[in-house]
Image 1 (cartoon, protein in one colour):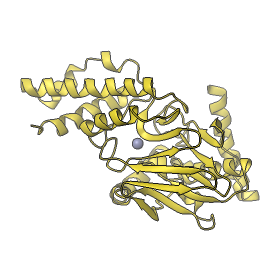
Image 2 (tube, rainbow, N blue to C red):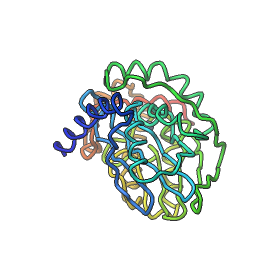
Image 3 (cartoon, protein in one colour):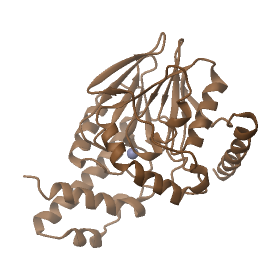
Image 4 (cartoon, protein in one colour):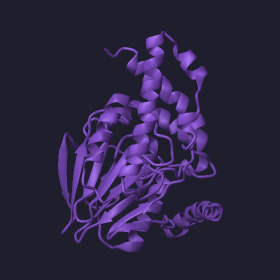
Length: 311
Ligand SMILES: [Zn+2]
């Protein structure tokens, strides 16, 4: 992993130089997980100067008429490197940039695609309000955690909103978009490529990287149940492996969230405070998750706040 990481960091520096000299960034590494479906795997880490914000799985789907990009990374620079990866595979225009939700590691590369003729930015109907509420704080976080490599990043909002479901035509290839009730966030959107049976879950599915609750734990558990009944051959999680069969990864995520909910409900029944829950810190359910020390306590806190008032 380390040589690739070092290579990527060097790639970003070179990309910055290349962008100034030749007007082009070095392409992001992508895997073709199914014919015409390309995914770049983000690192399973929190934002840092070392990783330049490259922490989410992002990529694109190529039709016969045009290309749909799905999530664009934490920074303009990552977006430019993703656009270079598109260009390394096809001359076709990018007609859609789809954001699976408003979290900064999925949207701040959008600016790199504004110059594509006729491009539409697509997201769930509630995404603009949620991004707008956080955008300034996100940019401060990027500046603080990523620094120079985040230069030029800014919010680019969707021009096309999905209330429920929508279909996008890429030429001989159709993507079905679906906006979900509040789960990971209040604006989660999945993208299904019918041709290959590939479902881009955004952060409704985390693999290895601990799931982060920023919406509703009850809603998320419900959505996981629905996702597990979809006939997807491939799933592209928002974090972790870029191609999973779906079932096992969903079960692991479901088990973690169900455990958080049960731990918090039992504490509330006993009259324990949130502080008691955090101090109890039984680590058994978090051993297999990366970044648990960073986010597990936050998940307990989010779940406590939500479940404290349930009937
Ligand atoms: Zn997210």
